[in-house]
Image (cartoon, rainbow, N blue to C red; front, side, top):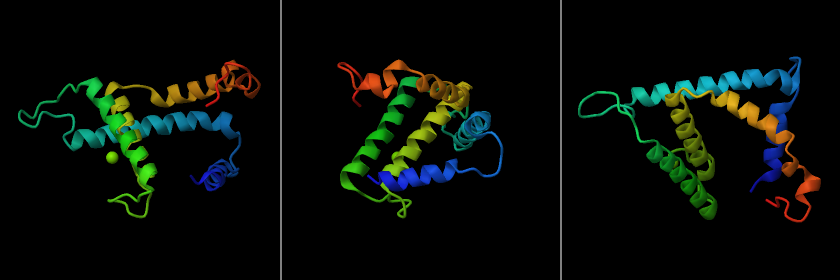
Length: 149
Ligand SMILES: [Mg+2]
């Protein structure tokens, strides 16, 4: 795992780009773009016929359990990529794990788009909630029974 390079990459995204406000200001931007991405991914999936009965041409009400199982399948493919240290077959300049995690996120955002969820808002709210959780604080995690992983 390339932990150091990913930390450097993450810091490059967080660098001051001259706009005011930092995270507090940008979270509304992030919420908007996550919801935009979800809508765009769902639109592309609809246009590709994934939400249409191919025999009748009618919209199909997809099974939610099946959609979540397909998200799991992408995570399993990511795990195999980690186990084998492989490159993706379709995007050979990228690691399998990176592409399969992208597939998983695409499936999640397609589902959220179909449900009309405010997934961007939920992510921003959950980040804020997690930041203040007692069971996520280092001092509490070090205690007996604290979360170690
Ligand atoms: Mg895949």
